[in-house]
Amino acid sequence: MLPTNALLTVAKRPAPGRTKTRLTPPLTPQQAAGLYECFLCDTLDLVRRVPDVRPAIAYLPAEERAYFESLAPDFDLLLQEGQDLGERLDNALTRTLNAGYQRVAIMNSDGPTLPLACLNGAFEKLANGADVVVGPADDGGYYLIGLRRPAPRLLRAVRMSTPDVLADTLTIAAQERLRVELLPVWYDVDDAASLARLRAELVTAPSTVARHSRAFLAALT
Image (tube, rainbow, N blue to C red; front, side, top):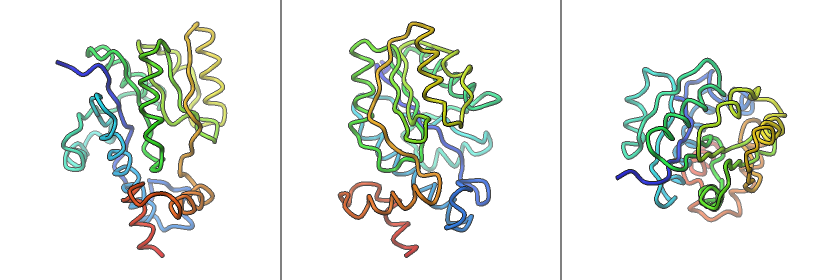
């Protein structure tokens, strides 16, 4: 039998010069790609701790399936399909909901210290009647969105990767008369300032938090 919940993680195979380019500088292209791989590993470790969910990776590019099979043999793999991010997110969510899951969330893979409570809270809110759950990012976007039924316009009608993503999403949800619940605000590690924030956070965080990213950054220094 299928679990009731599914949690998808959006990921691309890291490649120097194409991955986390806003982190160069202070990092080299090779370091930025290596650090993102650590972010991804930490995210997958976090997902493994969420109870009663089927984990999956929504991956790109198509020819890198073997990489993700090796990285996470315990995760389902779902190729991202669509011309832009909104279309790809909608396709992944809709396909998984149509496969029989009652609640599906999809999250990014560049917030390695995201608290587990945020992921648990997403499914709790959906189970308690929310149509949509959103995890706001402090750059105006979101790190997670979850649904109980397909809502294509919520993903496809929003211009992604802008400071207005969250606001536009909430506006459309209101137009569609969807009940939305918000999770705590968190941050993505995308640039030098957020990398400095991550380094500072890891100084006081428990050693079990973001262990891959922690080790990689320690090696750099």
